[in-house]
Image (cartoon, rainbow, N blue to C red; front, top):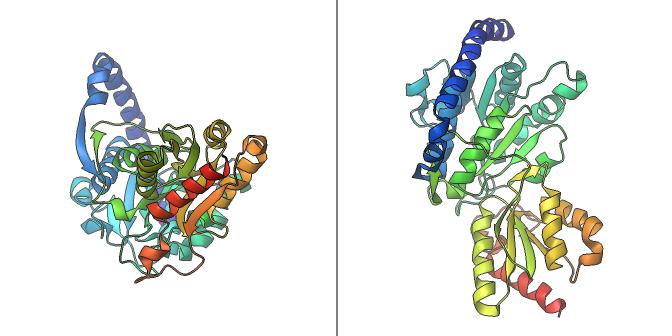
Amino acid sequence: AYTMFASRTLQSKSAIRSYQRSFLSTVAASVSGNENTIQNSEVQMNLFTAVNNAMDIAMKTDDSAILFGEDVAFGGVFRCSQNMREKFGPERVFNTPLSENGIAGFAIGYASMGGTAIGEIQFADYIFPAFDQIVNEMAKYRYRSGNQWNCGGVTLRAPCGAVGHGGHYHSQSPEAYLAHTPGIVVVMPRGPKAAKGLLLSAIRSPDPVVFLEPKGLYRVAVEDVPEGDYELPLGKAEVIRNGSDVTIVGWGGHLTVLSKACDRAKEEYGIDAELIDLQTILPWDTDTVEQSVKKTGKLIVSHEAPITCGFGAEVVAKMQERCFLSLEAPMQRVCGYDTPFPLVFEKYYIPDELKNLEAIRYVCHYAQ
């Protein structure tokens, strides 16, 4: 029944989408002379308002886009979908039952009919019940048909990472599990500006995307963000701090910790660290990291998730293959412990700036 409904709905909207694309192209051409003014107009946003703004733009520019998940209709527990139902109506923004597997399956079904599905998993810790749909359906949909059909219109958003009081079930970072799944894209932004541009790219990507949002930054991280529509490329890392002594790689909210460690290394020891934000976990930008490691001769990878089989292991293994003759010190991983995420001991579990500073000192001393 759903498939028939989705088919009728999308067929009736196809003409609208065609007109809309033509209209937007005309508008873009007419304002090309004011492009710099439009792009440079910025306002302050925190992470959740940047996410909200990106979804607002995506739904305004794509009439097939729908937004759904647990408690999404009233704004969501982190307020990321605030006012979206009022703007776009209950047929495009709606709650779902408490079933992550159902959310993912619904998204796949809708996208397979040509629609754009933006699903929210309320916490990344609860994405595991949806793994069958994500791993065995969403990731393989295009491949198993020989590219005859796909569900590339799926974007699953999920708040992840430490928040200070989340305990076992509201603090996990599942990016390494997801990165072991060919056929999907995995993204984790570090702040509002990156989040908006990457989310718009994710929603419009021809491939299904799992978009992990560091929930500890929803209200804390504030940046000047372009008001207009813009995209940041998926699969491309960003060097956010240039340096010559050591390469440090991270992603998501953990970049805040790593930035502080780099500041202290410079102030206290005169060590000039180069800091790279992967941004996209799968596929990740090996070339940017390789160029940096060959320049500095040293590598530290740091993330909140447990160290064993964490994504840092993949980064280190790849750099061992590509940069072995350039290395001046053993590559280091500064990560969470191999334990369930603790509540009262969270401050000991997190790979904080002091642990990373110690690793920076170690590799630089080793190379002397």
